[in-house]
Image 1: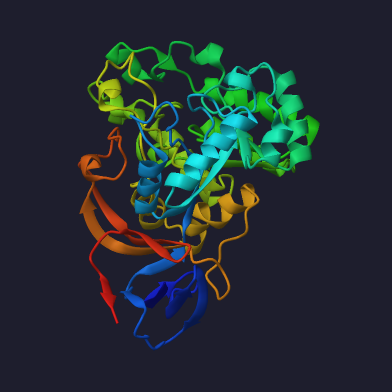
Image 2: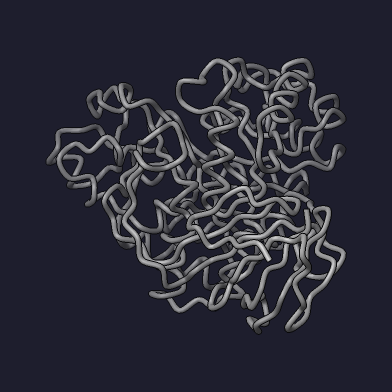
Amino acid sequence: MTLLIKNGLVLPSEKPQDLRIKDGIIVELGNNLETTKTEKTIDASGMLITPGFIDMHTHLRDLGQQDKETIASGTKAAAAGGFTTVLTMANTEPVIDNVAILAFYKQKIRDQAVIEVLPAAAVTKGLQGKELSDMAGLADNGAIAFSDDGMPIQNLAVLRRALEYARLTGNIIISHAEDRDLSAGGIIHESAVATNLGLAGIPWAAETAAIAREIEIVRLTGSPYHFTHLSCAGSVRLVRQAKEDGLSITADVTPHHLNLSVDDIGNYRTCCKMNPPLRSAEDQEAIIEGIKDGTIDAIATDHAPHTDLEKEQTMATAPFGIIGLETAFALTYQKLVREAGLSHERFFRLLTSNPARILQLPEPKIKAGEKANLAIINPNFSWKYDSHQGVSRAHNSPFCGRSLHGKVMFTIFQGNIVFTAAERMSHA
């Protein structure tokens, strides 16, 4: 298929240009390109055109959890959010901790995915934190990264060996930093809100203590390391100092930690239960400052689908996690660009080139000869989010009913339109 995109504001220059795409590749950029009789056209006047987003922390479930999400539904939700690449976590059922399960998962990706899905494999067998998985074999067979996400590696000797193996394979390890002794039994952030609701708290030190310990193992091994979903000011300070010390450390933050605080939990709203928990407004401010000064490298959704039945339980028994692929752009654009004044160039790097660099993927660019993986965005489009009208099988979002500003209108993967928000397509 040949596709012509007319009059879009192509990043980073934001000058109006036309893009012609053929066989999945951008073949021509220019002004007033003539339309051929056989190609489809998109009028992108007034819209931003950016490389497709990369989410380096997604849970697509599937395998034994198809009731929550499938690769098909999850990648369609990702496409609706402007993502053309997602890195999936290994805490599936069964866990992706050996080559056979990885091969089975990759086949499901080939059969179902509408965008690129990159699998992460478990660092340790069964996510138990005791015995390393076959990291070399998994890397050789397509594991892009390693993570025991959701189950932090408490044993630092195991973490040291994992980092040494990862340095040999060339893959990044992604850390869910949590001291489970400090967080044990906790439900929400340790705060006055937790006291008033009669809920056990999770102190910020559960995150910062784990990060401090793990940084020292990075210092010992010299291996690259990534901290995911930072949630508090102390974590930002530790990562900032580690970077100043010259350590190869990177970090991401979620849209929900940027947009919500513990005060938003209200009357036992299980859609606000996640791990790490929503922290204070002061922690939010520190995270934004960490983005501004470059301490935080990327935005990652931690899209975590659960069934309605699971989330309709009590705060104590409902699982941690929320969905976030379809709302990530609008929420972060509002918070970081409109409110915090971040430039378009720096903002979109958080969703494109920075995660690509961390995962050692080719830098996404909009130029002739590059893959046509694109998001076309109307930054001024106002809409109200309803998770039940979304694409994900799950509905566990705290943003239902919220008015949002800025929307992905088209997502293009390998030259194919995989998401359209409005009927703006015409034939020449």
